[in-house]
Structure formats: structure tokens, C-alpha cells
View 1: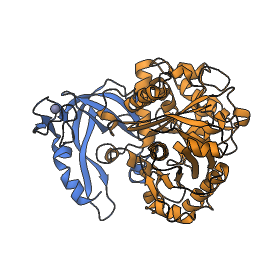
View 2 (view 1 turned 60 degrees about the horizontal axis):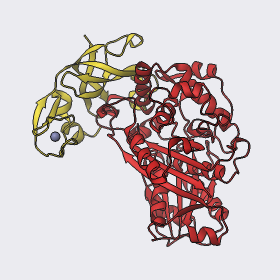
View 3 (view 1 turned 90 degrees about the vertical axis):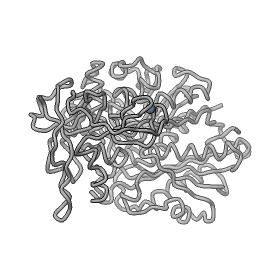
View 4 (view 1 turned 180 degrees about the vertical axis):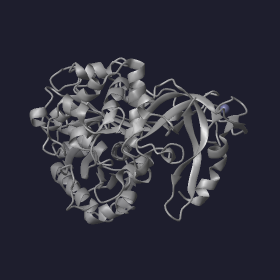
Amino acid sequence: MRDVVVIGAGMTKFGELWDKSIKDIFVEASLKAIEDSGVDHLDSIYVGAMSSGLFVGQEHLGAILADYLGMNPVPATRVESACASGGAAFRQAYLEVASGASEIVLAGGVEKMNDGADVTEVLATAADQEYEVYQGITFPGLYAMIAKAHMHQYGTTREQLAAVAVKNHRNGSKNKNAQFGFEVTAEQVMKSTMVSDPLRLLDCSPVTDGGAAVIVASMDVAKKLNKNLVRVIASAQASDTIALHSRESLTTLNSVVKSAEKAYRMAGIKPMDLNLCEVHDCFTIAEIVVSEDLGFFEKGKGGEAVLNGLTSIESGKIPINTSGGLKSKGHPVGATGIAQIIELYEQLNGKAGSRQVKNARIGMAQNMGGSGASSVIHILEVK
Amino acid sequence: MITARYHREIPQRYRLEAGKCKKCGFIAFPLRLVCPKCKTKDFETLRLSDEGKILTFTIVRVASDKFSKQTPFAVGIVELKDGVKLTTQIADVDVDKLEIGQKVKIVFRKIQEDGKAGILCYGYKAVLV
Ligand SMILES: [Zn+2]
């Protein structure tokens, strides 16, 4: 396998983009990434999208986006793994360049969620339709059941859940692309509308339109273009039972544990060698559980860690979701995995502005699908 | 809900029928073609116990359009006596008084209505004992 380098990135603002179509959003992000990289052609395109069929009635996204990007006849394929679609698209691009089959590949992600669909119903298609959703459970409901079990088993508190939202909004307030780039207080979180006990509105990531794209290339191309060498040093993916009730533990996400084990082994590093990490905080409890399953904190101590500031940008321990995370930046489901890579790319290039982590050299992106049935992890390092 | 799909799932939903792996004893609910533990493809039919306890739960207050008339309603993960876990609504309860560990019994109930001309969908719910 060859070295693979990220050489360019572009994203749209995340939010309710009423005047833009899914094509507009994808093309805008992709053009920015192409321009940022300085490449004059693409060998192929992967686009992560969770549910364009149900959200806007459009499938066959690979071809339609290549067309509107003016890139015909470049091969273009859509990749789907629920909310991990973006991460999975990046992994396909990585594998294609690493294998030697291509030199320059665009990995993008897009979702248009605000066009009139029943978003709760569409998102629930990432769970077991016949034996979970049939009973009326929603996505916040599935994570709420994880939260309830975690609170029962480890004594995780309401305040600890709120601390995730407070931190991520603080980080997101420094991100011009964030959908909810404002700060919130713990009290506001704990008094917001109940969605599915114990999760409230401000525990949940928003409904978002947005697109993100990166250009991945071989080391030769990166050197010719005189780019900072932001190398992909690990790419790993794992799956678990789609139904939450089929798992041995309701408080550990085995796909995260397994994909992390593979990623650390491939990169030859330990959790504490990371300078920052973007995790899939679709709900506040998800960040707590994932931070434990990635090995940053002992099982059951993730809530305490965030409340004590160990995951803040300034902490020096392990800054988590410096971009604002899904919670504040927004969560256009198929684009999220790519947006996480973009945050690493900016941080490792020292271009994250007021949310810059000092001396950031190694970063991880963890992207999840469903209630943890898919987990995709990438680790990037700058030389 | 599509009628064909609904009919296909009647053995599981109405009678709690599961598949028990003839080699390792793993109980698959719903039925599977391959045992995820030992990869055997040989199952016998087993009717699940209708007694269990609540492992975790939530009160859904914001639902999809199909269930929005029912809110708030409780959904939990229940572990049955034979070790099988399932996601089910917990019916006939004061939703604010539910607790993890409470004992439940599985009962037969209407789950959802499929619009004016659609089918009424039945299945299992749990009630406290
Ligand atoms: Zn078996």
C-alpha cells in the first residue's frame, strides 16, 4: 500500500440552505476543494450520502454530481453507511489511491435534509425497520436508551451530558461554517424541550443541509504540488448488530472498540499520542461513550472527564470536537465524516484560527452510522 | 407498512417464534439463516418466554409522523427469561414511574395504523407485572 495524502479541502456553510439544491451544495464544496488542492483533473469521485432517495427523491448521486461538477466521464460512485457514509467514502478514496489504481480522488459527502421529508422517519431507516422502528422508536430514542443504561450502570449524570453540549457549542462559536455557532449554558441544555428522556433538544445534533469535500492523492502528486504532507496513517472500519437490543452491552459500542483497535495498530500509536479527535457526537451521550471506547478514559469515566474539562481545546489532555462537532457545527448526515476530516486537515496545517490546538501533529476522526452498527476511523499525521 | 411484509412477520410478532441454533443453542429473534455465533445453518423453531425485565427505556416525546398521535409513549429494551432481548413499547404505565429492572409480561396489541385504507398492524408490547 502506498502513502496517501490529503491535499485540499472545501465545505459549504452548514445550516438550513433553503435556496440551494443537493447538487448546488455538493458542487460548491467540491469546487472549493479542487481549487484548494490545485489539481487539474480527478481520477475518480466518491460521494457519501445517507438517504438522498428519501430526503429529496434522488438516487444515482455519483453520476449526477460528476455531471454537474463538469467531470464526465470520470467514474463516480455513491457510498452509503448511514451517518458514517462520509467516512466510508473517504475510506474508498484512500483505498483507491493506496492501491495504486488512482493518483487523485475526490471524496465528498452531502445531505439535503431540509426539503420537506419526515426527517425523524428517514433517519430511523438506519435502525432495524422491522424490529426497532416498527415499535415507534426514533434515533434520539435509541441513544436515550444508551444514556439511561449508562447512567444506571456508571452513575453518569445529567450535568455531564450537558457539559458535552456546552463545550462543543463553545468550540463551534469559533467556526464560521457552524450551523449553531453560538454558546449555550448547562442550564439552557437542561431546560430545553424533552425529546426522548433523558435527552433534550440541546443534547441532539440539528437537522442540517451541507456538503464537504477533500482531495486525496499519492505522495508524488502532493510533493509536485508542494503541499504540506498531511498523511493518512490509519483507515479502519467495523460493524456491529444493527439492532441495539441484539448487543451484549448497551453501554459499549463494539464497532468503535474494534475499529479503534485496528486504527491504533495500523498507525502504530496509542490513544494518548493523539493531539485532537473529532468524534461522532450525534447526541451528547454518544461523545461520552465513544471517548471511553476509543480508550481516552476508563469505561464509565467519560462523563466526569468532559465535566472536568479534559476534552477542551485548552486542556492538553485530548481536545474533542474542536470544530464544534455534530452538535454545534451541524450534522448533514452524509457529509459529516468528510467535515471531520476537514477539521483535522485545518488543524494539522495550523489553519484552525481561534480554535487551533497548539502543535497539533496527529488527529483522529471517528464517524458512526446508526446506533453504532458502523464505525469508520481515520488517523492523519502531518510531517 | 406493506401488506406482504406484514404477513411475513406474523409468526414472530403474533407468536414470538424464534430460531434456536441446533449446534450452539443461540436463539435468533427474529429468525436468521446463519447463526452469528457458530455459522451453522440449522435452526429449530422456539416460542419465546413472555416474561422478562426492563434493561433500559426511554419516553418518546417527539416521534415520527406515524407515531406522533401516541406521544408520550415508553419504549424499552426487555430481556426475556430465555435471554433474548427485544425492543418493545411498554404499555399501560405511568411513563414517569418506569424504572430499570422492573418485571414485565409480553402482550398482544395494536402497534400502528396504516392510514385510512391501510392495514391495522399488530404485535407485542410489554406491560408491568
Ligand atoms: Zn450456533
